[in-house]
Image 1 (cartoon, rainbow, N blue to C red):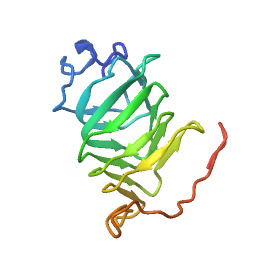
Image 2: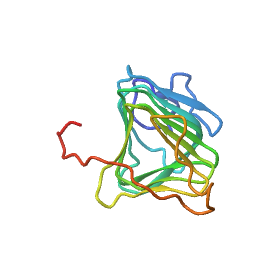
Image 3: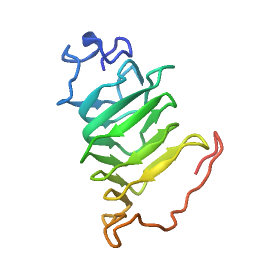
Length: 173
């Protein structure tokens, strides 16, 4: 987005003057003066790269946002998804989280999705009611290329323990 408003659907907010469509790849740079993105609910985009700290907020009316190809969050940066917004990874989509994905809404890794969380990356569930679901046929890679692939060895969901640290607001890891 350029230096205009935070409205996704306004063409003049985009560097090329065109609102991105479902087949486009979008980069959100660290240098943008707009850090909260609005009015994008119900949209689909092929790829998003986050190179700054951004909040994708549809406002008070709940809506979803679909990434069909690749979601990239660079190291040291955060993508915040407020409670009213649902981030959806389309069928076969990949996410590469080297920074932080902070969600106040449920986050599901569906069958065919591949989510890699780098050695310094985090997925943060912002509310006590937020659920993280790893479906059969999905892959979650945590700081390695081996990953966790439920359902491949026994036909059902894999179980096990992943250590999480609960932090209070303002507390550092």
